[in-house]
Length: 269
Image (cartoon, rainbow, N blue to C red; front, side, top):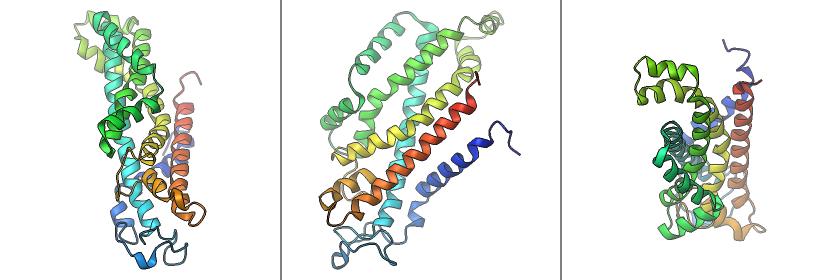
């Protein structure tokens, strides 16, 4: 059913698919209402009824971790898709057309790349104010530059290829050449880069929420949950360990998927 070349991907795609399924249908998979408070049952250790225990407000931690996957994973994938498409498109135009547009946009990307990404995102998110959308916008402002640089370099290496010249001679427009001949040839490298970046985006969004610059209470988001439970690490460690473990395993699965995808799509191998 599957080509032998792609069979090594099956376990990782399956695990990633399970995570995405849980994120999409989190509302129907939570055993309890993740926002329902029960102060009499606050900080109950993990037990048969509450597998991950309860937090300081008596909310079921497992339900909040499941609901948090919807916020964290879905927001990260949407953010990654946005910066990948925008950045790749900008880079492809710069690499193919060149000229003043290329110079201006690449110098702009150089300015953004001069700042550490997380430090820049913290500064922008701090100016914009708290909220998941503002945190995502802060990461998007600097995140597109990486994909613009990669796609531009790839386009520069293939724009003088014989098949591009043949397409021009046949009367193809610049847009037609970009979308029909150039973009399909650089899609593999861009896809691998995006797959490797999912884990990074998840950690960065969670990091901004942990710092109070992302998702705001009472939103169930893994970084915000860790922020709320950090003062109880010694007395009720499950409150912070559960979302922390969710981040760890999610990032590990997507990183492994990206590594294996790179091995499979590597033309040289």
